[in-house]
Length: 254
Image: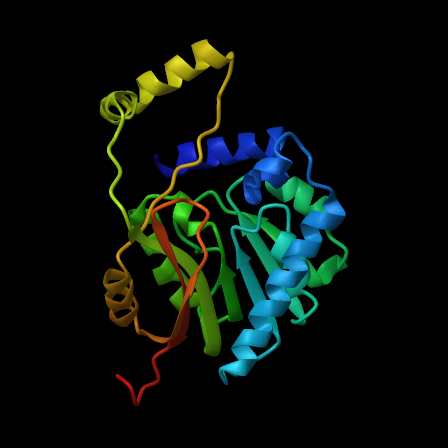
């Protein structure tokens, strides 16, 4: 799925059932998330993360933070409780529209629509903290790795980058005939089929992993170093998810 298709699918998710698309609890499908409960999950996640960062001795400047793949601002709003200024970035216009609606921090929290496979709208070295969770896993590795390189570029010299990405499926499951046929069907035909069957676009949420060693090598190649790694839970059976903690390499390390 290319970047334009990815945008189309997530924009559709944002119009159909945005909170469920972000936190896919099967009990909440069909707009069953309450906004209070949904944003409370974001506060807990960010508070737990900041406590963990402090517990392992990773100091972070508290000026400017970025939430990559912000959706409707679940984590962006909570990051604004810890940082002076926070930017939320998402590929879907429908998500950004809702994020602005739910913003309770005024100008301290700003949202941006990004339709490119880079982060050229931001200058080098501008963010003290960059966080991305359950976002990179939904794009093909060529895009997730490109964004990781961009994270390093826009990270401040003293800043901390934290991102989540699955490694690879822990078990190999046999594929059904239907899945095999689908994997061999060109995207234009799949889109036409879905339009005929569902009367419009049925959004698809794809899952991808990247080998952990490959990520470490990528970070080193773009002037960064892994300063922490934490294995996290993964709702998709057979997948192992990691939380990467990254800093720019200092001149003495290079």
